[in-house]
Image (cartoon, rainbow, N blue to C red; front, side, top):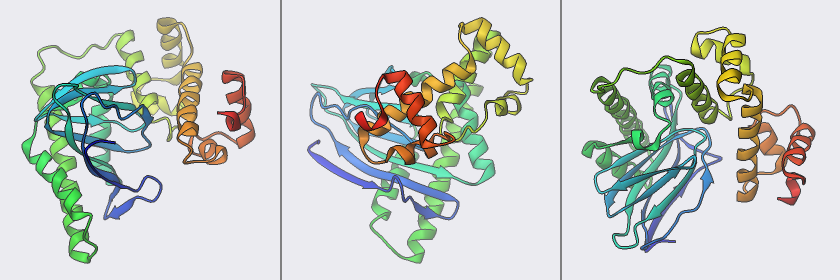
Amino acid sequence: MGRFHINNTHFYKPLTFGEFSLYQSGRLYMQGGEEIGQHPHLNWFELTSVSKGSGTVVTNGMASKIEKGDVYLSFPCDIHNIISSTVDPLEYDFIAFYCDNEDIKKALDGIIPDHGDGKKRIFADADISMLITSVINETTEENTLSTIMMQSILTQIAVRTVRAFETKTDNADVKPKRDATSLCYKVMNYIDSHIFSITSLSSLASVFGYNYSYISDIFAKTTSFTIASYYSEKRLERAKLLLKEKRLTATEIASLLNYSSVYSFSKAYKNKFGHSPKST
């Protein structure tokens, strides 16, 4: 894949730097028209920094054009694909990380509700691009000073990302909508980006500040389907993609998606797709 590819992957055993977990970092020089292929993200944020060329990022079915100088922010649990231009091949650096610091985590999560549209996730920050390159370079080092350096770099990346979106929000000409459609969109976006961490749909009440029965009623009236059916659909979509990757067993996927047992997962999967997880 690509003319040049550095990929430091730690999906299931992330590297730890203080309160940060690094799941992936790398550099890819794509060929004209090359496609990464649709794949699911787990519980991390990912930054894609374009150094040359142009292409398209497809996130959860929505396509966004990217070009040199753009930084694209992917959310936890996204279904993601990147396609290079045929005439101007795409070159980019990328990192995927998670942060346990409550203030940073809350700030990053705060970006999600209003930025489901891929076009709203693109920003420009030359310093972030440089810092991402530093992460890639620093992963070759294994010593105490390198660990301290990585923690510092990742902190700067996270904070600068949050500030970039604060600026975009502050400069917005249109006030955010607060109607039923907007609330349902945010609920969907939240479920999409927290599909691996939701253990009870009733937790949506504390997230959105409304009684759960009120949210559920508004959702059903506005979308014509229930929150539970939407959540079930999204869980099974992620499960199917994870099974196709063949990195995790059905038991591990059932646990990751918070099913009560592999049996209940297999039953739901068969009802949806007509065959067992093992047959995918």
